[in-house]
Length: 173
Image 1 (cartoon, rainbow, N blue to C red):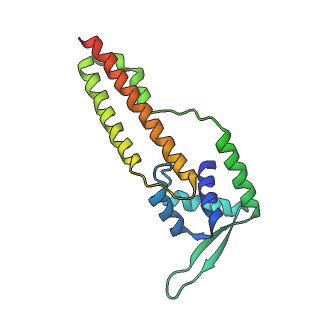
Image 2: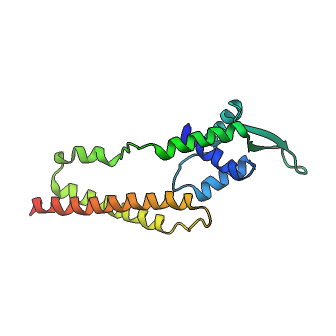
Image 3: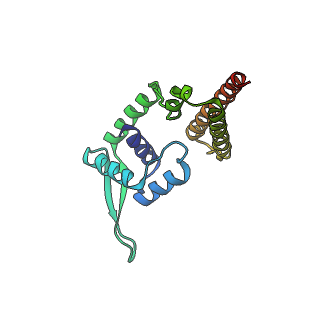
């Protein structure tokens, strides 16, 4: 919940927004760093409100349905800074799902292992190219840093796979 709260409070630091705006921004601009879905965002916003970190105003425009406008309050700003510092200073243990397959790679014959790793390599290269197409986010460097981190991790994955395939290919000769 902390990462989700950090994202939502961070978005509210610049301006008050209604849920649709928040979700659209996440979907359009932050899909590289989060897979948060709309129901999760709304549930997290409700929890942040219940915990006293954000305020909700009801807004009515014409015949449109009433919508909630979320604003961060002073308590929420303090919580945001706490979450931000914790996030920036913590080291992560990253669990790559593909490492599970690597653990048991010896149970497959090399003629099946190498093509599977080559497919993973090609898929990683495609992801890397997509990430490299992410447009720069102007004056705020934070989003750019997050995208750069993803690119660096994918480049490391590509290098690791290329090296592993080369090494495994030596055994098959």
